[in-house]
Image (cartoon, rainbow, N blue to C red; front, side, top):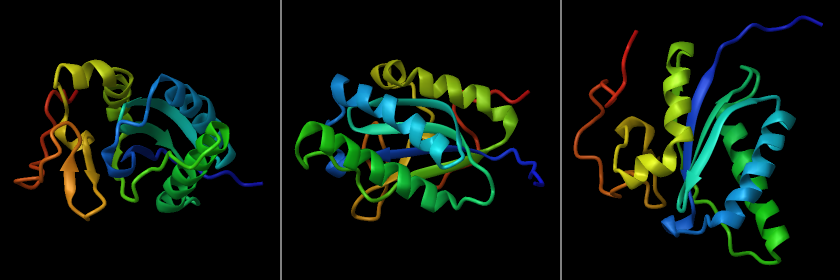
Length: 164
């Protein structure tokens, strides 16, 4: 069977419903166990996954035959369903929006390191704006750390990003 060559990389971020701090250590462990299996099931490749109490970051490569919107919908929907089934209730939900940035192979190491260091980045407020935008329930784009509306459009320069 013919194979398709691709190098498609996406940084995806989404938040808990109403930005509630629902991701505790137990939930984080469940997500980190479940999501990689689902990504593989949908023919994707996880490159990084990490989270803080109210949102999740994912770096993934998926084949071009898969719609990114469908992929995100399936990962979000199935993971919240799985968590609720294991927790014996319906108290864990993701909000409906998400943020996504495509990147080149050259940007993968930087974004991977950024995701792997999420907790420290948020603790030190050392965030890269473009990697922290999410669309909230009200349809507004918000920066995850400060939860304030975007005042200006993205200027094409990521903080701390070093081009080679």
